[in-house]
Length: 247
Image 1 (cartoon, helix red, strand yellow):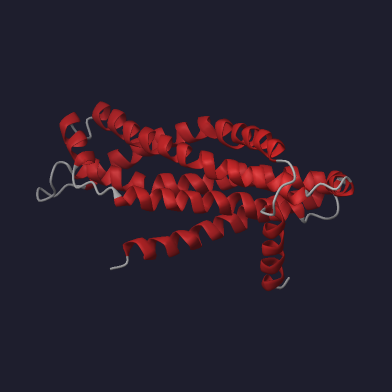
Image 2: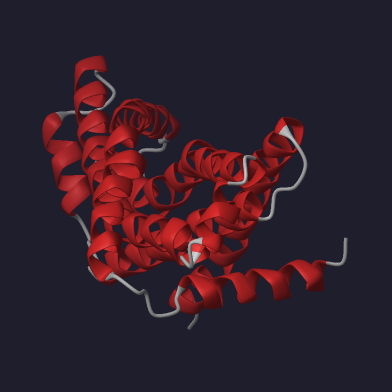
């Protein structure tokens, strides 16, 4: 189907999503519910992946730097840069696109084919705003905290596994994660996270909201949501990297 058709329909849906709500108190309750559904339920998988990836990056870096010209603190420095710049903000968001995105698309898609969305419209409720806005707001609010936790656990996992395996000493690692730190890189990482949070929830909601047919189409909408969310995450990651690192 024509991509311009989807782009136009997506922006029309977003216009409805961000139109003035009739009752803000309902939205606040929904946002709190979505924070628990989207964010808190994702903590275990984020924690496990971050700890082990931090350890893997540290061990690979330690055994990759065999030249005597490479300073001893390079292991901690490499782990910190890898986790803060790309692993936590990008790779973890790609994982969340699979977990959160597919769940959102399936949930809204099931509501569409069972005519629950039509019932909301008949009652005079802005179904797009009621169903989608709390998900976007919740993701934008909770994703930075999830990624900050991922960064901490990734660096801690690198320390624990690197020191326990003998890949590096405690002093080398701690000195490395402190060396040449530039605070603006955190602004870069969390800017990406907020953009990715919006992409994941809005694109997944779009495919779920415009599902038509039966249960098979819900599965297709869920797949499309994950695929296109992942592509847009990589695309906007490239754009933001060019903006922040352009000299």
